[in-house]
Image (cartoon, rainbow, N blue to C red; front, side):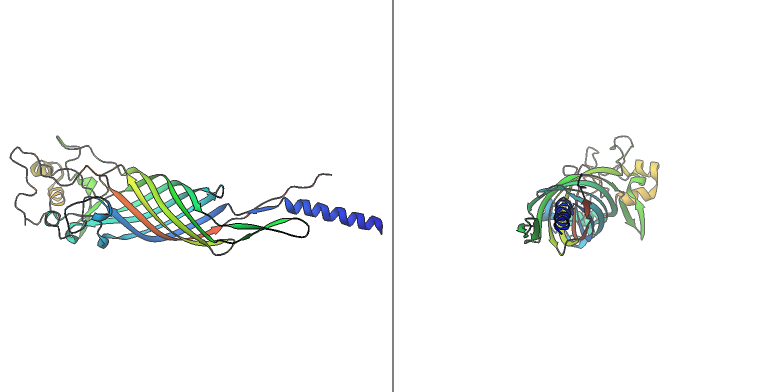
Length: 303
């Protein structure tokens, strides 16, 4: 009887050791979300002279985005995530009452396909308190279910601005509407560029696997051609000779309410079509859902 008792105690001890070294850590998480997308560039804008950042935002140009990715929570304060996002952005001078831009009458839409790697800093994290069982084993119980974080990183995105003319959508890049690649014109822009995501997020833990959250992210880019507009009007005769009448119509569909607004000055310098001083930016607001992985690591007792 004594031997059985000793064996029972020994087996219990081994079980305790094995259990104490089993860690169910929810470090990995699938993420998926959807929400509105905003754009700030040369086209459209508020009913005022062109300004910078959110003061020039026109809510009528809001479109959508959808994303998916994986998060890895390294510590209680830092995590990493990789995201793939598809979005649509747009702008339309017809939506603003500002006279110069309204007369310019340009419009665009463009897909955004972004792949990004981001670092998250959790300034508010799920709070836990430790409880002790009779055997002295420590378990954890969640007290606070809200996480708040800042994030930044780097991304690569694809874009392809198109302009609507007489009910048809035409590639701005294909028609070289500002004389890209022609004598005296700017060089052709690429369909790919780099973005720097910066933003703020919140997450609520529903249970040990599921969470819901919201995130706002601003993208700094290094291109002024997401909307296909940046510099000056190119010589219309030369543009037509190179790329045809459609290119000229896309380059200058102005209403004519401000005479000479799109014509060269006395020295032959083209009129301003866009403002290359500020690069284009876009913004994502998403409502997302997360699903966490469990990973178990067991250490076998050695005899």
